[in-house]
Image 1 (tube, rainbow, N blue to C red):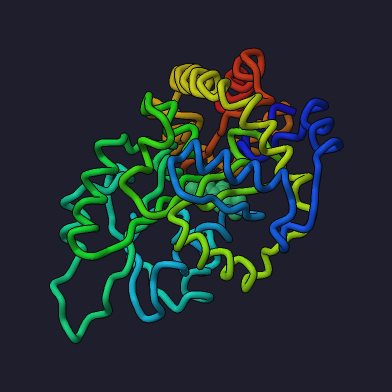
Image 2 (tube, rainbow, N blue to C red):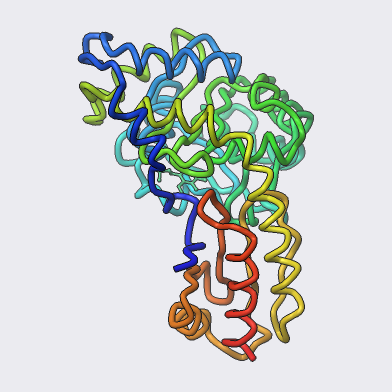
Length: 339
Ligand SMILES: Cc1ncc(COP(=O)(O)O)c(C=O)c1O
């Protein structure tokens, strides 16, 4: 199977399993797991933050970051197609008592004007806004990148209005490669960032929340409240350290293969694809006269998996287990099914 459904489908390599097998561990609830500590220090170093905390998932880390900074009854501003709004089970509202306000954009990337227009003047009749949540890369737009200057400009508008800024950086590592800068430069102007280890990096489990000592201290308690406290979790941290060391340098190859897939798909009758900036390819199939589900079933029969993304799109995501031959085969299968 050429599995392009998501960059979360990768399985641990033999070397990663070896790293897991030999990881020194302890009870992380007592702060005694040396491998978790090493991972948290490594991530804080890479992101230039005071502290980082290991979480079982990105959704939990996003929640903890937001709940640690906003109060119940206040609003969180987010781009209208944000993962936070559409794929996180309303968790910020359910567990934090905060509402998410959607800011529509054409590109998926918020601009300073978008944010300024969404911030209302102080009024006793409207809820206060406590946070701005950015998403980098932006999933729904096909993995578009907010560069360091764009993040800084938007964050400045938010900060002037007294808002905290959180980044859903599930694919921050891809964003940094796409932007040609370090991950630290992308998050320098913000308060907290969630970043996943289980997506492009290929670790089996885990996301990090990074920020100041004080905010991450609050997030530690929220993680516990959400049931995310883990014990000898150095086994998972070892896999993540291995991924950071061994697989971060190869993200550019995923981006090149995403571009190759887009180029190949674009030559097929009725298919439209915008050029991907990172590892996500959104394929618009309304011009083929076929439903995404029909195309996906045909692809599946030819050993290629993708997922539907809305009524007229299908999504393919590049990752460590896909090579150049996989891309060629995927284009061939799509061409056969649509043709
Ligand atoms: C943009 C974005 N944010 C957050 C998440 C949530 O991560 P997790 O699946 O680890 O909870 C995802 C997962 O796909 C994502 O794509």
